[in-house]
Image 1: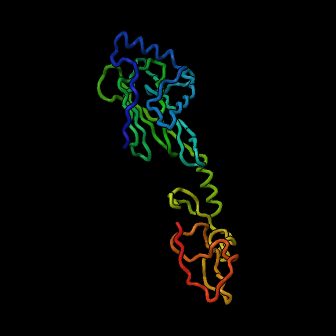
Image 2: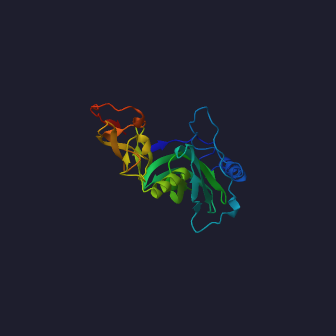
Image 3: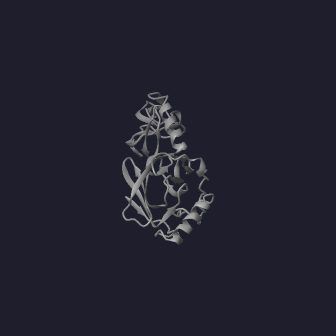
Length: 268
């Protein structure tokens, strides 16, 4: 579990006259997104992404004291579908008839709590106004956000409201769909152990004299009478382990007779 503490906000934690005054100011300033609970640690000090504006008046209250909006967010990736991030803009409307202070936020992945934000001092939100927060995220999946609120000055975590959050990686979804079309296996391959596809080849089993003749690898079988290497094309594009292969460009190398002992090549 990762625990993070947001930047403190200049809002009172007691229901004094000064607290109500600042709370009203918060309600009148809904068009300006609040600062993110976490500053994103990017190289070069990149500016935070702005939170999309939400029309608070259009949000219809239900029976619960707080309406927490579901969200769908798309990741922005630097390398196709890798090295991704996004800001999840969370909005919860105070549907009660009293001031509420928001004290904590929890994020769950597959029913496991993966992030906790505790607000100190808590944000005081007047009736009809909305609490807003941005949460940096880097992985796709279905999440659940839970926010805790209570009357100002009371103890404990109070009540809670939850919302479903979907984080999508469009590049990853497209790559996995292409992997299905080629009857491939999706997994982690290569020395960098990165997620990618291992497609089935269309020329599996075809005789080959050169690695360039195969969609995948030309797997060595034997030498012919002239000392040339003869093999067959692999079933998949990626071959792992230490195997005897016919190298790319091998057919352009004059054969020797008797041929040398074939040594395995280790592939990952």
